[in-house]
Image 1 (tube, rainbow, N blue to C red):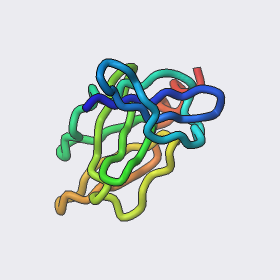
Image 2 (spheres, rainbow, N blue to C red):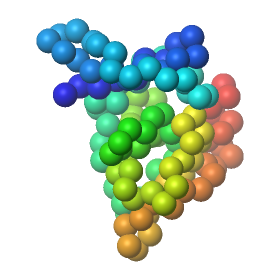
Image 3 (cartoon, one colour):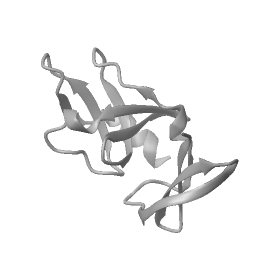
Image 4 (tube, rainbow, N blue to C red):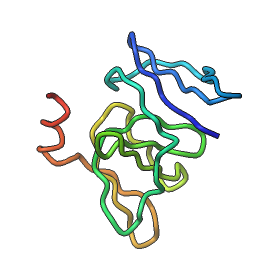
Length: 116
């Protein structure tokens, strides 16, 4: 199932492809995510041996989506988080030896890149 986020006019629309057409599944506030189309169906599962820095795009019942580069997305299992990172914030996510997510502030260079 293909999913994407469409952000415009302060709203974030989760869409799923249904018979070649995109249909809204859920609409909520954009919470700091810049306007655009985010093809999160291209996301890769997070490598728990690495640190992933970027914008937190969206969280659903099972998954946290993070943009780590232009058109590059990572998924994290929601169950790995003690406390979910806020949507629209730049965060670095690494994993403990027990496989739990460790969330920290993204590096300064990441924050500045977002403002451009």
